[in-house]
Length: 272
Image (tube, rainbow, N blue to C red):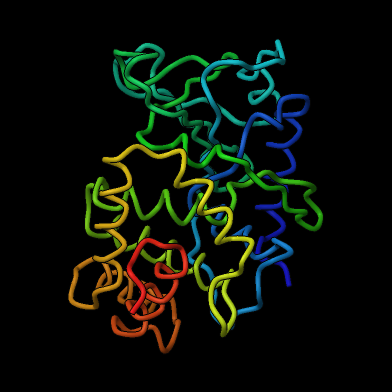
């Protein structure tokens, strides 16, 4: 089954063309990663639709790029027009496709010691927004083959689940928190069987946790507990959005229980 429309496939093909020669240093994250996980060879088939989004977040580190290309020029050549906003230097920029409803934003880890000021940084001629805890997604990314598109790099399933859970309370609005809670839940379910989370994903999570600091680990465990409680507004909003998308059987109790079982397997919650 195809999870992308023809127009979306065209956008991704043009993005991959722009990244040619550098794409091993960039990964697709955010809501698009949640959709493209359906193509991962470990993912099971589920009977509910992913939450749709037209935005494409592309993550990379801000240093150490081996390619000496002008990525900004390449993105423009592929039909994405940079729309700048704000007074930052470089300005925050969304790269908008003229031929379809898609906005690409490049993002990079916010490391204050490396870039102590500003919310953006120049990476190969594009403006990348700095995002806290994004480095987690860059730990051993994976590659999925998307039909009629090609190979797309994504975070590992474990890195995605842990990063979404960690950053949940940093999101500004109830809607954003609910959507991220649903993304974490969906990824847990995609990579689980009736016996629990896949062993490969559990091993990935162990590695990712080893890269985190004490404060990150403490917040990660706290947020895992919140996502396992049907009374929290995170879970209630996730359930509301699932119902709005026509997904049945995903009430707050169902979502919270699935999260609790998954987080126990990932050693984020104590086992009974």
